[in-house]
Image 1 (tube, rainbow, N blue to C red):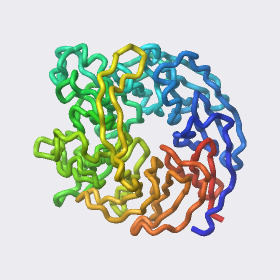
Image 2: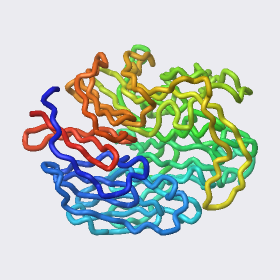
Image 3: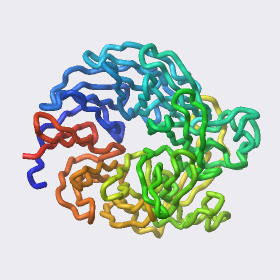
Image 4: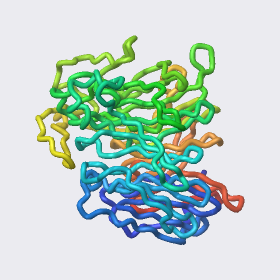
Length: 473
């Protein structure tokens, strides 16, 4: 590990927007494809960091939801096409060789509070994208496009319409139709089952729940959809009637997990509500749920699959903040050691609710959070979890809560980052730090990428508006 050295750094001439790069780069045939804030994207020489081409998307000047978090979380690729989304809720196909636009389709009307931020998911000949804008009174959805033409193929609404299954969990169609449940993180795909798995976000208003009585499906859930038709096969709701902005917009990890003496084809997730879950990915059956943080909000899941809230009427309890026990940053699973690695956050706040004024295209969160005064410190940690039992095997503690992603390798290493900008490699078995590099900027949302080129193994990490490449030797 001592031989892992910085090779080059690519610095984007864009404003960091407080967070910088949140995308995980694609590396194809010696070229890195990377998206950044405010509609920027690049093709970069993987050997030298030299720019091949740059793309700038002309966002609408009167953005609604897209102005709140002007980020982009990456490309998808198929053949010679790249696919990305925009802050004014368009989906684009670019020519991989030149950056020229091949097609440009409207996902939804941004003036109604919609945006798009996730990396698209390519499944066969389809490009699948979820909507963003859950802090606005919108109706979330997941949409499939034809990769060649951009034609819209199917749409699944994450808020059921009147009379549809799940609509009974809303007090009225008016509350439901603006109920949120944005799908702003890239889904996962199981080719054997032909299912895509997407997480959904908070109900709207975020903190004010008095006028949306009920579980509010399919908010704060995982939905499994038929990739060809968009038909819902199953769902599981992690946080019914959420009033804490605990989106379930996570990276859902597929793997074979030994549970109860047999190997199960599972989908795993460390959730914003502080619990680690293992579900059967064919049926959605809950196989395991254990806290992976020290939250006192709830410590077990009941037979009905719902968290058993320790003090349902208490408004002054110490709860995880709105970033949650973890967030959208990618975790990682090592199928050899059978350990799940995740960035955990230990925080303490109280919540308050205020009835908001609902206006189309405007934020309507309905409250906020207050830090607990006698809480001396919050912190973050890289944690290894045994998905067979939910037991924590080790942790590497960080000074402050982090939103950096995690990458594990076949050689038994785990690469992670922290809020202070440290990029670290640890032993996957023990959590012992082996190497670190101070990037100088908080690592936020993205995980490392590794690839082989010219017989040399590289590791990339986005940090702020800089992409740094490392290699052995």
